[in-house]
Image 1 (cartoon, one colour):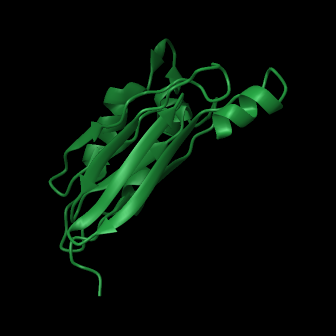
Image 2 (cartoon, one colour):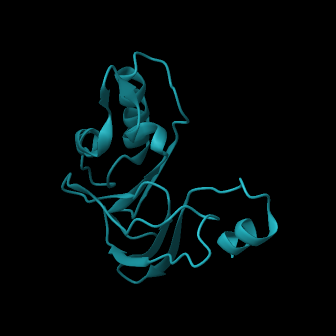
Length: 157
């Protein structure tokens, strides 16, 4: 709907990127349905400290007349979660290098310290943002934002 709105009802220079994650609670965790429009793919992490990019990349929203956005469905069990972030993190520059996806994944992996309560998502976000800023000598040349959430390791009452 957003794609059609921007394409047909807005000025010609109006477009955006987005990632949509719809969550549905299941008896053994959550089902996440992810769709990406010109935005960086989410990072999925688990309780063991592993992290990977998930979801298919899609076109910018509001640019192509017949844009198709793929839905990626995944199950998040106890201790697993997602990190959503802006391209200001992966495209952060220092001299001729970019922060990139490998540094992003390494940062998330370093920040995951498994515990009985599950991964500390607050640490993942603050560590990632701090590392992206430090990579740029403390100056953000683009938007830097991240949000993370995880399924609790223990069932909710």
